[in-house]
Image (cartoon, rainbow, N blue to C red; front, side, top):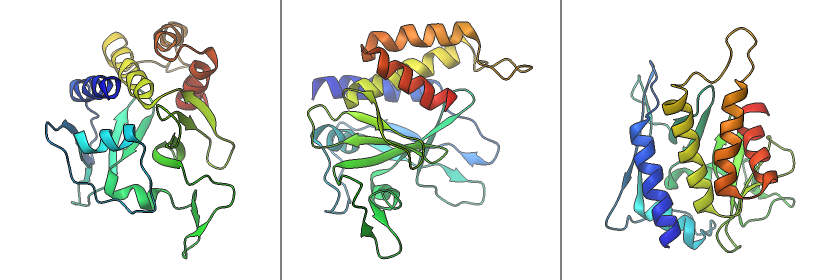
Length: 215
């Protein structure tokens, strides 16, 4: 688990350095645990070793609305978009509409039960493949076909950390031209360069950038 542990610690440190701010939501937090958390997850959801390690070592304190309502996870600020990552106790509910259909939770014949939705951007899911080595990560636009964004869950976490640093440290959150509503060319160039060092495959780099900022 060394690669996942390293990526997780970096991810948590980075999210603490660049927390999301909101006038109507008290932003939650990620905390690294030296002990192991007890997970309360449906037996129908089979976590991979990497995903199980992530949830047992990463305590997720969910966002809270100003009316006191606890949300299902934490929003992460990537500039002009938020990626929402769900807590383990809300994973089962997040599979609804993907693995399970309707109020009776009928199995979707087009959905592999080894695909776990753990995050989304505007309801576009991020999916971890739990029966493959390293836990590859996929994404899609609502009901469209899934496409790969990382060969492993640790690469995915590292990518999120790098994007956070680039957006908030290098560009101070200003990544889009306010007049043209287009992302700055130097931001996209630096983003591609940074992600290439992690993901190694141009297809994955293009897919992740498109998912976050163009799709």
